[in-house]
Image (cartoon, rainbow, N blue to C red):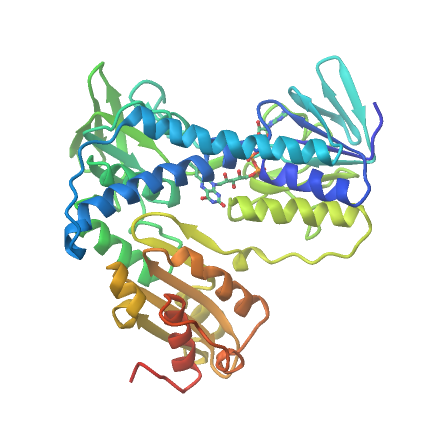
Length: 454
Ligand SMILES: Cc1cc2nc3c(=O)[nH]c(=O)nc-3n(C[C@H](O)[C@H](O)[C@H](O)COP(=O)(O)OP(=O)(O)OC[C@H]3O[C@@H](n4cnc5c(N)ncnc54)[C@H](O)[C@@H]3O)c2cc1C
């Protein structure tokens, strides 16, 4: 079958490319081996956030007495909790299928393989198009010597767990590990996070790293940082994790969350002339691969593995194929949120990165403590907002920690994306009382006109 565009993989990046291309008048064939929506909808962003919401409700009940509400938590009905998660995913999946059908996108269910540029095979069927967009996503990175299965979980099997573990060890203190740790702790588990690097969420600004470690310590989550795993062994009833310092942890389950690697094995990329480096597809700034007419989007391209970056990649490539002249937000300005308790939200450069790039004297930083923010006080959250600017120049980084701060990241993204100076933003208002005022106060202070700070 001949068409205008073939999209291989129907996750965030692939379906976004398909929708935008169809909107721009292109005929699109979207090949998906499993379910459209991919990792994010079925095994990632959406189901984890559904379970984290359950965790938040549990926390709210637990803290009710502090605001004068007498409530006791009877129990968490795991079956009902899982039905809630599945229900949310099913609704969004149905909506997406409807959208793809309404845009007249041909969805082919099956395993696609790039036979050559412009030609993709699915079983006995061959599809041809001048442009092929590869969007096959990523899978859990294996820990050498550790076989997953049984009591050794990946994020996928962890989501499906039909019990709340009493003791759990999370291997990996990145965003996925931290979110599961936070969720299980709220649901009552004893949680230990093991991270080889010297801190949790090691790529974030120091305020977030230290703030999260402090908050986790307060919540009774044990962080074993700067420690590597030597071995993992399981029996029918428990798992034993031995660390390189010879300490031994026992738990009901272990989650392996040490990162995600592109799912590109055996789909014909290198044979078709697509470059691959350290497991990632090599692309130019336009997201073109070395093979003519073959583009790559989403988690298979090195950079932050986030759904909204995938959406943007998909839209960006579809628009280029359709002949418009789109611009893309650079990777370092992609907003990122860790939906733990407390939440972390960041965009742009950390203080350390800004100082390295521009020189320590050329960077100014304001930290605003959420203790000064009325809405945060009402919500009972500690936390902070850090804004990093170039001296006499634009804001280059915003880093926030505290309940619900994820919802504040969009304003920060606009400020950084538009290269606004704090002085440009100063005249704009933040409704009172909102947590967004904390960002406003930090910007006012950076512009030299602090209001509620000294
Ligand atoms: C536990 C977890 C939580 C996450 N939480 C968040 C979050 O809160 N926010 C966020 O932004 N990101 C989150 N992510 C990351 C997000 O899910 C990914 O960045 C996003 O899904 C990447 O989109 P993609 O289209 O590149 O790949 P995917 O979503 O993985 O989609 C790839 C699709 O291609 C299909 N496919 C693969 N090979 C073939 C083939 N040969 N033929 C046909 N089909 C094929 C797959 O079945 C899959 O559906 C999370 C990830 C995980 C694992």
